[in-house]
Amino acid sequence: MTTSPQDVAELGTDPLATKARDYLWMHFTRYSGYYDGVHVPVITRGEGCYIWDDQGKRYLDGLAGLFVVQVGHGRRELAEAGAKQAEQLAFFPLWSYAHPKAIELAERLAHMAPGDLNRVFFTSGGGEAVETAWKLAKQYFKLVGKPTKHKVISRSIAYHGTTQGALSITGIPAVKEAFEPLVPGAIKVPNTNFYRAPEDYRYDEKAFGQWAANRIAEAIEFEGPDTVAAVFLEPVQNAGGCFPPPPGYLERVREICDHYDVLFVADETICAFGRIGDYFAMNRFGVQPDIITCAKGMTSGYAPLGAMIASDRLFEPFKHGTTTFLHGYTWGGHPVAAAIALANLDIFEREGINAHVQNNEGAFRRTLEKLTDLPIIGDVRGAGFFYGIELVKDKVTRETFNDDEAERLLRGFLSKALFDNGLYCRADDRGDPVIQLAPPLICEQAQFDEMEQILRSVLTEAWSIL
Ligand SMILES: Cc1ncc(COP(=O)(O)O)c(C=O)c1O
Image (cartoon, rainbow, N blue to C red; front, top):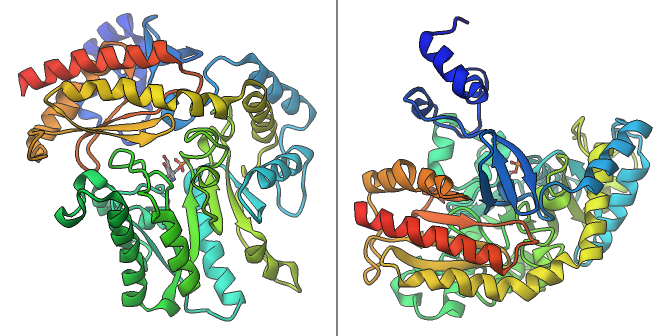
């Protein structure tokens, strides 16, 4: 490709940003702005809760990268664990062979996972884990004589990944539209956004939870129990802005799944590894799923790794005869990633990361709740170190912004203003407009205060320009 005079000028000031614009295809990225003079932010370094760009400017990492960097940036110990493994055995697949780090990690995860979730199938990320879980559910029911059970139920506005199966489970129409038709048989039910609960349930969280869970039973009845294989849900739903499960909700989902012989898949791609203050959020909520999918925080992002963890019952039919789960990924359980995950879990234990989240989650919530005095803040919700702040046009009526306003507010102003003011986080309108915060799990009051102060100043300005 040729270089224009404008490129030459930009190359002079920020060559990486210009090359990023011209050669890199960034994910989920609208490119037009980058051709209208906005520079691609280039992050070059991280230390603890902070990251730096290629101009040397520091930012608080309010999203742990992408809900990933649990133990913080710049941990030499994790880099060294990866290097040591690469030297000894850089790669071997898990296709009929095993290697020590994958074995050790599988055993450790099985001990951490709730109940009899003892069988670990490694992937390279969360979407692959979700994909794997749906395929397992389908094959499992074929093996136990219920071959018509193949559909899945998930919740509206939930994000479960981008591969065609996982995207079918995803409940965000705007993300799916361009790729329709997707895999058939993926049914959607309401999520647990209590702030947007139907009027009758708005003041009774428990009743709302029962109502929402019962929509799953209704969908199973409607589709035909003989056709439904699994329910996928996050313990705390990310997209839409952190919807915790109302009291009794997960228990009721478990009951419904048992009643209809439907598998309960907890997608813990974000929630696992300390985000909600335990290795698995389902441990904290005390409800037993049939499958957990997880990824992100398993390595704190020092290498890519995901997993589907299935119960002994689901693995049982695969122990016999010629039965095989004909499914796998070259990178699943990569030795370097597995070694890093083990070292990451060592840090969790040594530094008491889960206890730190439990001891500080109240302070995090209280600090963010200070923002509710601003007219633009409708709701602050979440759990652990995982929060969403919903923005509204009218606090009393809970009126939200129309599409144009949301576009101007989130893309036109907030994302950039927050970043310019030193806070990397996410302004999101996959449901109603929200700001999402999920910092490294080593954050303390000083970082909570820094987030609150930057948010206060930027959101005050946002209100004034609306
Ligand atoms: C709940 C959930 N499931 C699945 C995924 C997809 O994970 P990945 O991007 O690793 O494929 C994500 C990603 O954010 C997620 O949040």
